[in-house]
Amino acid sequence: MKRTITHLADGRELFYYDRRDDADRAALDPRDLPSRPLASQMRYDPLMDEWIAIAGHRQTRTHLPAADECPLCAAHTASEIPSDYDVAVFENRFPSFSFAEGDFPDPGGLSAARPGVGRCEVVCFTSDHDASFSSLAPDQVELVLAAWADRTAELSALPGVEQVFCFENRGAEIGITLPHPHGQIYAYPYVTPRTRHMLDVAARHRGGNLFADVLAAERKGPRVVAANEHWTAFVPAAARYPFEVHVYPHRRVPDLPSLNANERAAFGPLYTGVLRRLDGLFGVAMPYVAAWHQAPVRYRRDLAYLHLQLFSVRRAPDKLKYLAGSESAMGAFVNDVAPEEAARMLRESAVTT
Image (cartoon, rainbow, N blue to C red):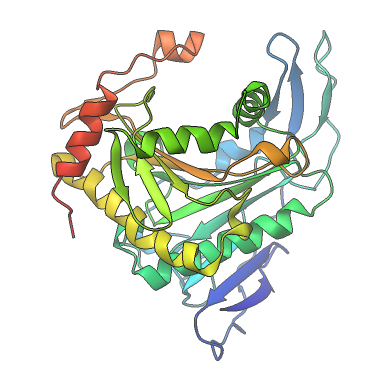
């Protein structure tokens, strides 16, 4: 893999990840761009013991442009990427977190406030606008994994960063703003509530590592969807979403940079197969969120276990699972599909091509 670092017209970093060592990345960004926005403000919720990012500048971000104006397609006037590419990563133009600190009002009351220091990046999985992650060849998935691992390592070393989160949102039902196959990386200035809670629960677990014990139990049960020598994909016993799959490496590692070459090579065929089974369930492209759970930079890192959480809000060909009163207000999930049934449906789903 060859990595090339360059800059966009407003100073943001752009990284090319290429399979060929002779790839030419000298093209410059010709656009006249406005100044980069200031960082968000973090406000503390004393009732929930959580930090909330206030990022008003994100209201102006690009929303579902025409295909010929897609900012992730290379080499046209609206593009964020000046030349054709294999995999490209760049700083988000409308970031939730950044190092461009500014002055913000005091929220008053019992809420503390601080700058939303961190970084947000966009990961373009392919230059093919009409592709999807499920259609990527194994070597392309390995290149995406290499980019995720590289960015995780570098972002984890930035001052003030406490957790790095790689994820993909797919489908209008999820709320995407760009249809081009891409994901994002958030470098948070705090440990996210879900990660903190999981690790606190893991600290109370008696016996071995909680995540390893869950994986061992699921590998013996009826909810396995797919498996190979290095990875297992299963529907968790207490799935929150109609179709939810967790993908674990068999070796406990804290994060993506810790995967070895064999594990990286084995991930793509299994994962893209699961994605194609999702698409084959109802004969439509399934909306989903794919979320990598990695160890925080410092907090209880020794307890973490890298895994991918994949879930869809589609529960039937013409029905979505809305996170309404119980889920949104109380955080109390009600799942419409039994996990065992979801696993059976996915195993028997026609794998789309």
